[in-house]
Amino acid sequence: MGEKQVILDDSFSDHTDLLPTKLEARTWKFSHYFSIWIGSVHNVPSYVTIGGFFALGLSIWQVFCIIMISSIILAGMMTLNGHAGGKYGIPFSILLRTSFGRKGAIIPGVLRGIIAAIMWFGLQTYAGSLAVTILIAEFWEPYPTLGADWSFLGLSLAKLISLLLFWTIHVFFIFAGVDALGKLTKLISPLVFVVFGGMSIWAINLAGGIIPILNYSGKGVEGNSILIILSCISAILATWVAQILSVSDVTRYSCTNRGQSCGQVVGLLLTYLLFAVASITIIVGSEIAFGVPIWNVLEVINRFDSKFAIVLSLLTICLTTLSVNIVGNIIPAGYQLASLSPKRLNFKSGAFIGTIIGLLIMPWKLMESPTSIFTFLNIVGGMLSPVIGVMLADYFIIKKREINLQELYFPNVKGRFSNGVNWPALLTTLFAGCISLIGRFLDILEPIYNISWFTGIIASVVLYLLFIYLNKLILASRTNKELASIAKGR
Image (cartoon, rainbow, N blue to C red; front, side, top):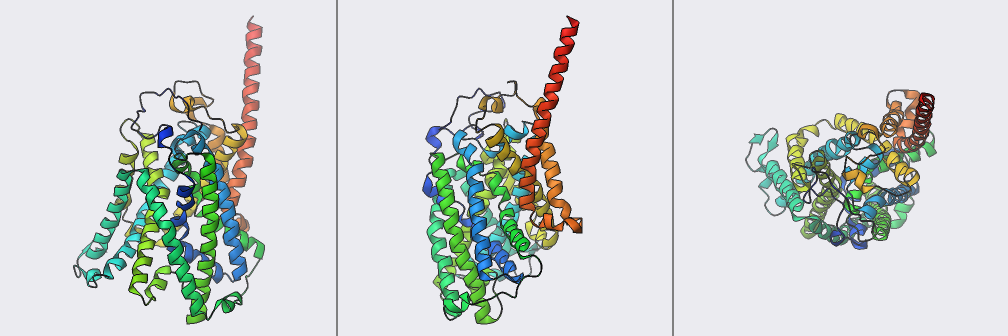
């Protein structure tokens, strides 16, 4: 299992949740990992993204290939970056130290675990609360107009109640523990297949059968089609950059590494297969039937005739949002905040603080100017993809999957990083991040920016190995000079 005895310093204690997961707590099996990312695939933003692909003029087969290629790459990245968590049982915030050093890990950790996670938590919670409002209105029609013109910082009374209710459910799962989360993901799995499979059948019937959908032809893309396809794959993978980074936060609970690997691979491939079929049939089928493609699944739900179907679909949307928010945002934020102050915080208190901050940033205000929000998040994503490259290169190539846990948890042990910082890792992240984002400011390099996910990871692997090699040469040169100086002194 890879669990080892670790001598800890005074900043760590058994309740911090930053220690390697104990054997008896590693209860997650294939079924848990099969269903854990379903909520991250089937949500409103994902369907809007696919709608954007059709708007570019791509055909249904090009879109289908883009989705499935993305799922294969994603499954591989999740498995690779989750290996250390499964083998050693350590969270992402601690795993970062192996490649960046104790102090160096603070920068990428704050970017992923605090800034990106908390901002996304706020936005996802508010977006989910909108579905909660619609769901409650199905049982109590006057609910959306509750409080008349009363508002709190731009929120109506109904939206404020829905937001606080949805937020409270998140807090419940924080304190209920990882077992409750596992049960939630298992509940979501069949619901997603029923609801989104049903939407697909509904769209096919609207279009007059599957043949009209298969015969649909896009308007054709302008420019290099291969580059456009690569940019679309990069766009899908870019939405996963944060989850790929912190996947060890969930793989640390796996019974075996094989269980988490097979579960994630099979789960992601099958889920994306359903997503490909559902998204294509819903978007193309609605365009054939209504003359206008429906990209927002909430609009699809509003067109259902059955109240039972509407309620079940809205409930599923709420649960998938809840799942992705907990796994992708709350867990990383909680561990990262706890790692910054392990004497004062554990995972639960850190995660709770993160949820409060997520409300204080007033996500409903941020969503009023989506351009600036997503520009910022894209920049954060451009800086995070190189971190993935550094972590993979360091763990698999430099360390050959061997981690010194005592060095991670006991700062007085002589480590390989001076002053707790691995400068090659930080420099690589900086340079590779600049390379992946520079195309946003220089038109001639825009193609590099359009595939920034690939650019960031590939550039970071190459640069990191180069910097490590140069660093070894510098250290060897210093050692030789010191030995020569000692020899002369004699």
